[in-house]
Length: 84
Image (tube, rainbow, N blue to C red; front, side):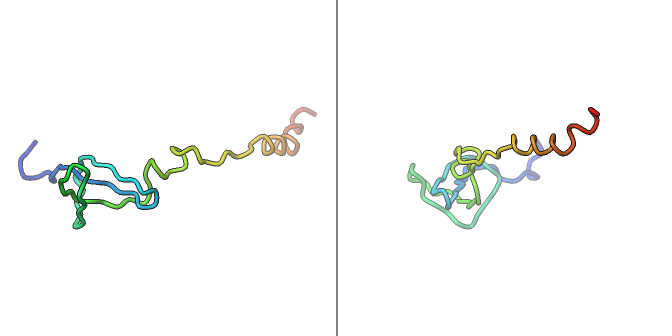
């Protein structure tokens, strides 16, 4: 890689305030806010709107739609037209 053209890549804390969840990873994102992490070091913190801790798909709280009623209604309307 060419020196001096890439953003700094370092440890950053991503925090989901809605789910009260935070994790430390490496990223090129930066922030003026900092937080003291569990290891005693201070890292920049980036607040995110949703993470795996609060997303319905990952938490198992996603709603399952009843598609059987939709299929039956479609077949009642359009299913027999070609069979006659």
